[in-house]
Amino acid sequence: MLENTDYTIGVAAGLTTSVLWTGTSLFFTAAGQRIGPTAVNTLRLFLAIIFLTFIHRILSGSWLPTAQAGQILYLAVSGVVGLTLGDQALFTAFVDIGPRRSMLIMSTAPLFAALFGNLFLYEVLPRQSWLGMILTIGGVGWVILERPPLTAGNPQPNWSRGIFLAFVGAACQAGGLLLSKQGIGHGWLPREQHLTAQTATLLRIIFGAVATLPIFGVHWLRQRKRRLAEGIASPYHGSVRSGLLLTCCGAIVGPTLGVWMSLVAGDRVPIGIAQTLCSLPPLFILPLVAWLYKEKIGPRAIIGALLAIGGIYILASASQAH
Image (cartoon, rainbow, N blue to C red; front, top):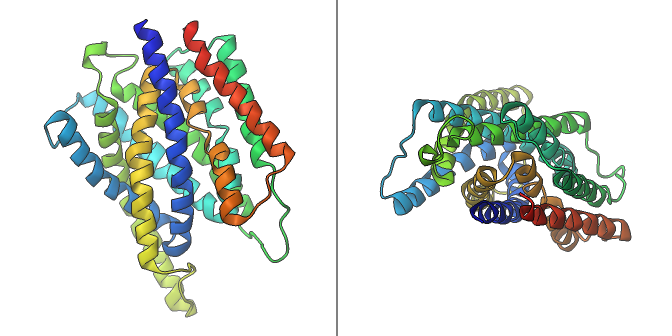
C-alpha cells in the first residue's frame, strides 16, 4: 500500500513538473531573446538558490543542508550535467529553433532515462510501463510536428546547431535525473539515510550555478569583443528590465518548483517513468502557443494529445501492479 502511495505521489509530481516547465519554456524563451540564453541560464540558478534556501529554512529549520560526501558528489555532478551543460544547450536551442521544436527533441529524454536507469540502478520497467511511455512520447512528438512550414521571412540560420544542442539537452536531462536519484541515496544507502527531494534540489542547484560562472564569463567577453570589433549592437532585442523580470518568474516556476517536483518524481518512481511524466510541456504548451502566437491547432495535434493522455493513464494505472 505504501509503495502504491509513493508511486501515485511520484506520478502526480511528474505531471506537476510538466505544468511548471511549460511556463518555464515560455518565460525563458522570451528572456533569452532579450538578454541572451547564457545570461538567463546563469541568473535563474542564482535566483533559485535564494528561493530554495528560504524554503529549506522553513521546512527543515536550518539554512544549510547536510549530506554525506558521496551524496554531495553525486548531486554536484548532477547539477553540472543537468543544469549547467544540459540547460545551456536547451536554452540555446530555444533561441535557435524555437521552444516547440526544442521540446519535441527533448521528448526523447525518457528513452535516455530508461536506459540509464536500467544500466546503473537496475530498474526494469514492466511491459505496461513501456507501452505507456511509447504512447506518451509518440503522442507528444505527433503534437509538436503539427506546425506551419518556415517562410523566407522567418529564417533560422542556426537550425543544425539547435537540433544538435536539443539532443544534448535531452541526454543531459536524463543523466542529471539519474545522478540526482543516486545523490538522494538510491542504490547505495538505506532509506532512512536518503535526502529529501527539496534538500537534494538545493544542493544540486548550488553546484550547477557555480559551474555556469566560467561559461557566462567567457561568453560575455566574446560578445563584448565582437561588438567592439565590428561596431554592432547587442544581438538581442527588447528591454533588459523585462528580460530580468521574465528570468525571475521563470526561476520560480522552473529551477525552484519544477526541479524540486522532478526530484520528487525521480525519488518515488523509476526514472524512465519519471522522465516521461516530466516531458509533457508540449501538450500543455499547445493551447498557450495557439493563444499567444495565433497558431491553428489541427486534427493531428488533437490525435497526438489523445495518444499521450492514453499513455499517461497507462503509466498512472501501473501503480496497481507496482
